[in-house]
Image (tube, rainbow, N blue to C red; front, side, top):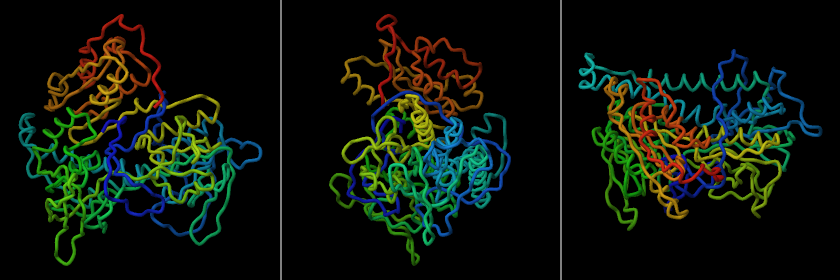
Length: 575
């Protein structure tokens, strides 16, 4: 799903209860998105290679109850500045995921005395139960696909016999990567002077936060400004019984405790697609269960159709669309997992599946309950904390709450780790007196299947809707990976790049790529959108030959811009 779109539909279901979650929506493939503001804010590199420091336990405010005593880890570095008079800190961040980490490091660079409160483990969902370990599993699935593709290898003159894998070693690779990145994040904050306060954080006033663990006294700190960065948890619709063994979420699947012969995946967004790539490469048969009428409903339709032809049809995957999983019962007493499917429109029973396992990939829900929002007169919307274009929290009356901000999955604008980091950096700029509004339409998203899918900006239907509303023309340009020398050298010519643009101004509205290393290629387009670069300018950029980057080079050159129709691209509108 593109980074700019929200798939929103009602389900007669409710989420499984969690300590910080109060949603009533089925989250979309790349998360909910609300329009409000735009200007580009640079992203931080999440991992810093620093010398190992003696680390103390700290982590994200956890949906899983943790016991122990409240703890304060004071950073050894002296770069953490002196706080504003009358406060313990200039900035306190609740949640040490990628968003909180990015905000904390930028704040220290700006000279702000900063603390971060964590109740679980540093790194949040992305590092521990999300994008980091999943990429380790996808690296394995990619290698397996190469080794299993006898035709591809033969075309390259290679011969490989009987490729196989060791499940536990694969699982260890994912776990070890998460541990390494988590350690790097912790060390980077401590080395730069961020104080890590361990415990569950609760706002008790506009500039006061308490933190602690169950059964032990709470501590309280004051801060000139507070950032909420508590992230999200897997969304589990009502009627689905999760046992963590045969019916599980992505949190459990990343442990790879077993590889089922037949697994149903509920939801065909990017989480479901990526796990289908992993499981089929490791030998599983997959069945998708999708509530809407087509697979991958959040992607650009043309890209979705091509993805189905490349990623679904040739593999051991079948699917049911237009149906809800009304009830899922875990396997027990020798019986398989049972899935009752009902028609999404009529609610009539359509089928009952018997499978070995079921992965619930119906999106994510904000982890915001228990934050003490009632103490500042803030009411969540489907669990999300309402914010303005500067990420400043809004109360129940629509007024801005002074000194309190919310970033990342908890505000629902764009549920991506790098978006959270960018939002955090933007907030710090605001705190320091620099007007900075993040351009969410410039933030790319990617699905790390084989081949990959990436996108930035609007889909073609979204762009056409906008053009009809605002009265301008749009055009579409395309180029194939089959025309790219590097892709052909790799014998990986399957793929398409698509550009949606305004011919009167040269403004780039959206770019979508399916093909080899699509996730790496998208950034030229996302940066062009962020900087307001026009097609008539970027088409003169020089790309090394032969490289995959020439796919975008050809794409921009193929666009037909009516020079002189409009002198310049207007300033992006806040989103």
